[in-house]
Length: 274
Image (cartoon, rainbow, N blue to C red):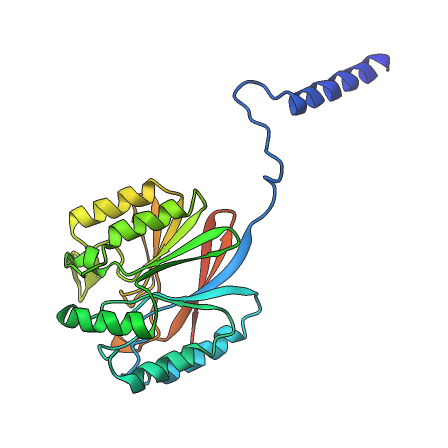
């Protein structure tokens, strides 16, 4: 009986010692490490206002987002807000008016159908004046959201006064080591369209982006453009491509509800009933 009591005592002392003085190669958890970071945000993409019934589809999605049974940190629109018609004030105000009905804070970035390569300077000026900056950052629960216009980098054209890679690197440096999520429009992967694979970004541009993501604590990349529900990778970073609001190719309108939990992203794709 005495032997059993002594054994229990020695085991307790040993465990206490390991907790206070962990063996070499084992680090004690820092204070507060057990704290859970969990929050929700929403992504919508490719509304293409000014064509078909896309305004009404967006209106119904906004109503559905506003009824979600979660506290939503924000809603991010990942581009192609308009359908090559950003200079049309009527289309612009109608579309933005519907988006302003969202209860959660709204953040937008431009896609290839917002700032037009064939009319670059004019449409970029309209976007900057009427919608917002080409790259900006916001922070939620200690996570930095970087919203970037990357079409010049992806397709290899220039826009005076704006260099996407340099701007993105500066934003990541400013994040000061905090976890980050990159939002942009066109995924830096090959496309698959009409039963054929086609390159999107050039090889050097992809490599430059992946190198930058690897050098910083970027948890994920969130995109639109493909009008499909897909998962890809940029190096070791997951690239989430969400389905659109627009109805081209018979697509059902949808949005993404993301859960950020301790450095990882999960999501649900929620479709508008037809």
